Structures are given as C-alpha cells and as structure tokens.
Length: 314
Image (cartoon, rainbow, N blue to C red; front, side, top):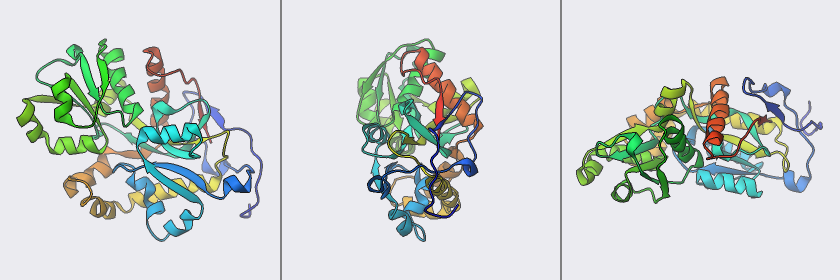
C-alpha cells in the first residue's frame, strides 16, 4: 500500500483471555480529519524504565522525523492515563489499572518484569508480618502499582490495610504508617539508600511487588502498555511500527542509555544496566496478556477496579 493511501477498518478487535496480539501486518489505518491527524499527541513517562521505548523519539537519526508526526508530553504514569481518558492525549503509556473498554492496547510494547522489577518496593518497618500491616503510605504515581499491592493484601493474604496517599519519602512514610509503597525512580533510589533509611528507622523488610505477584501466579508482572483512544483516533500501522521499532532500537542502545541516565539518577551505572536489561521486560507477549486478564479479574473481585472482561487491541 502506497504511503498516503488510507483504508477504512472496523473498530479495534477484542481479545479474550487466551488471545494473542494481532500481527502488525494485519493492521491498516482509518481516515481521520487532517486537523486531528497532523500530530498524534503522546503522553509519555519521564522515568528510567520507559527510556528504551522512547529511544527513536529522543535520538537521531529518527527524532526529527518523528517530531513531525508526534507531540510528546512527559508526565507521571497516573497523569498519562488521566490525559488519555480526558482527550488531552491520543496515545499514552498508561498503567494497566487505567485501561477501560474505550481504550485500545497498542500491540508489542510493555513495561513488565519476569520476576523482580526493583522499582516497585513495599517496605515494612520492623518484623511485622505482611498480614499484620494495618496502614500503607502509598506513592500514587502509578495506579497499577497501588492496585497490585491491594491485590497482594486482600486477595492473597486476606488482609485489608488502609492505603494513605503520600509523597515519595520513605522515611516520612514509615514514620506515619506500618509500610511504604514506593514506585518507579523513588523505589530505585530507596534501594540504594537502604542502609541510611534503616539507620534512621531500624530494620525494615523489603518486598518486591513484581516478585510477590510472580511467586503467587507464575506470570509476569505488567505495569503499563501503550493505549489509544479508539473513539478519537485510529492508530495506523505506521504508528504501531514506530513504537515497536523504537523499542527495538532502544534495546540495542542500552549502554548509551546508561551513560545518559547516570548523571540524572543516583544509581550506579552497573545497576542501571541490570535494571534495563534484566529487571524490565519490554515485550507484550502472551504471558503478559494473560497477566492483564488475571490482574483485572482479581482487582475487580476485591472491588479495587471495575471489571474489564475483554481487552481491545488495535
């Protein structure tokens, strides 16, 4: 198909629990007004873990070309979802807890982990058992991470602690609650400062939420996916290819990303390298799709999130 020729396609396809991602070769575009099509508004996350996904959008030789098609706005994960749902963005890297029946998942990319992710830490002060935790000071940067913690307590442990929205300061959080939930870069920084934190507070227990999920389900932990407003914009095969090729190219430039991020975050370069190559899994594969279904089912059963019986894929 020549560039510029558009074909109308039906609404995004739905996939049940056993479904797989539709191949990119099957994807075609829909016609939308030029005023909407001029630039696709993308809500992205300014954390370390999405850095490989954003490689082509931030680096030559493709950044200048892509900037003609995409307008990128960097924000927090929870705000990405808010912007997408409110129509302030067309595509967003959003927490899976924010998926709704109106949003369609862009196939191929994910922020996930096959076991330990490092960047979602539940810190419990003292020797208190998880079942005995009564209050959790929670960084609300990611709705999915908070929901995973609630599934851990309510579904797997039969406990019902109170979650209290808090700034991402582990010492202050643990001075006012039994446990602290840290998300993203603050969790990585807390791990590096563990000795200092425990010098202030005494011994703490550190639980990796992704590891706790994997131990109990045998599945990957999935934090975020690219999603689009299916009723506002039809995402073309070109955009899907752009997002997936950016992931591929980013994973081929991990050493460059380590060099870029070392001055930006107080984490040793070797730790950044391991984080981007071993802790984070960037492909939305069958195991991750199974996790999306199971997580949303568990979250609905405990009343944390509304049911999402089907997943829509572009």
